[in-house]
Length: 590
Image (cartoon, rainbow, N blue to C red; front, side, top):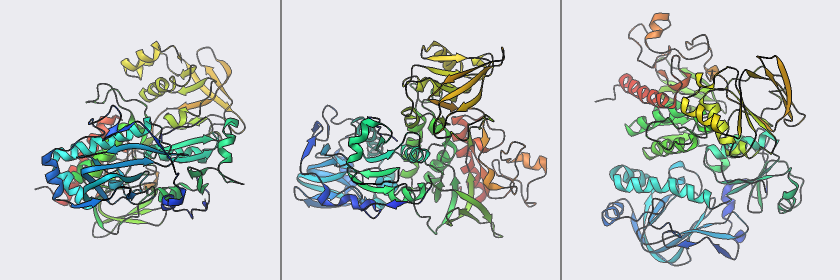
């Protein structure tokens, strides 16, 4: 079965659940029997007391009591269900609580938490709804800690914060490894709307299982949805249809990922959730600034599509773009930053008093003292025949598990010679034995890190083709063939292909700013002293701060800024420097 646990426009048509995730909690739909998943006290079997299921010490319990209240719970009591808003962390003083997955045909016990353990998902910080059920296994006494108090606890107790935050990361890994199904996404592998929903869920860490409606082996699974006709993609929980062909904003509201914009006055609004935006969010929130982060898809940015980053300091074994984004995201959440996605910014307005308003396409407005534009870049689309028509149906600009599972046994082609292309080729070679890396130049090492170039050339599943360019892609509803020219010999070959992955060039995502903010000839934002040199700084009463754009109070950070090195580490550093500039402007540094 073509399914994965990972990680559109059109009118949403909601099924019998009336479009509310809370409908998942209907008790009548819970199965009458339970399948155990090797659960033992406080953990999965063999994983007791590790980072996923830590045990609190007496001092940590004592601190926790200051932020919550004790309560006795009788056995069998349900504490929360899928679809319910999580409002508190549960610290167990005695007894046990079990966490259960109800997304499949049978209930499955994910974990049993015992004395000095705790129950509480990342949803406590994100505002999303629960994806599992929790009930009292044996009579227990717990400390209930509300969300607001939890944030204060995380700041006041470093050891408690470390254990809880690490458990969130490890439990997420365990859940995915154990095959928790989560939401079911029914859709054709060649459907861009299905791909968009799956990319969104992957980027935002929503467990799900994709069922390919084009695969005849999945006909029995499709039959469990009931009588159609259905408008795909269909979102279901177990056998209950929840939504049909939802737009991305509607789906995000349904999940609780997109949050309504508060009417507060923010200290800074960060546009973009890539390394620069996440870095800025961590530093801003940790230094007491009221912070909001807006992104079109979710945390990660372009780096989030990297399967492996091996030259980022502090990760000798390498780190995926997704993992790096999740860790930064959790840090920012811990310190109180707010996130909302998907959000498309229409414009930024500056009032006469120097305050700003960020206007979104849906009519929402975020009021703020400063703005940080960290929208990054997108890979450039090539002027190749048939490319735009097949985007999302065989032509892709990222290489994650979502796209990899769309590939079949036919060859695939990666276009590009930089680190992103090399990392994509290495990753995709785990799924496909015929990966073609199409390189225009004569030497891979001219544009790729030497360690990666050597690794790519040593991989028997990757065929490096120098002096080559993509000339055309063909296919009716999905990609079928590509035309590759060897520019040294002027010979063009037509080849079968299941997918083309493009990692060429960098176009800044700054179009929404129009012409009112100074840009260089390629569209990157000009900042700091360069504005003075070009005569585009607009405030005669002071000099611009280092990362300030031509519009006072609006800063740029990361790859969208002119003159940056386009590295993850420098983008994070840019985010930190942008917050220093914000402090200097607002006078909030002591």
